[in-house]
Image 1 (cartoon, rainbow, N blue to C red):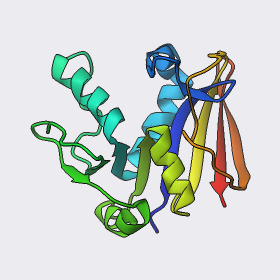
Image 2: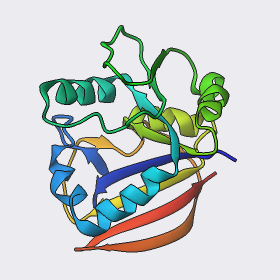
Image 3: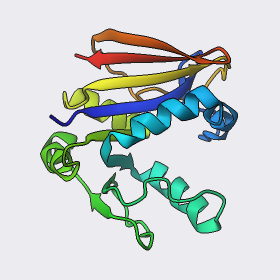
Length: 181
């Protein structure tokens, strides 16, 4: 059965983006061997991707400039947005508006036997929690304090988490996996 999983990196004080909205601060941690290995193993289980419009715009900008490749390969990517956004040649994109709960079944079906990676942003992940459509949080916590920025869920939500596992990814980086709800 397909699960919706929010896999995200955060500072020790719970921020996924800095005060300027950038996630570039996380780049040195993402290239650490333990983090990269775990992420690669996770990505193999992903059948579809869900992403918010602002996050998509940042990724497309970087991919168009050639500074990063399109990281989702040929996986179906569902983009929640309220705006017209540019497409990216060769990417399997579906732009959608509306409620997470309305679209979750179609998104799950597009994943085939794989899971759905809720990439973010934080507000989109919060919407999945509010819609009771997020199954797991995979939180990579790094030894850095940002002091402000975008928090994990981008909004005030309330939900119960149950710890499933904690994995040491090396260099003081931990992965905590939680069931949601």
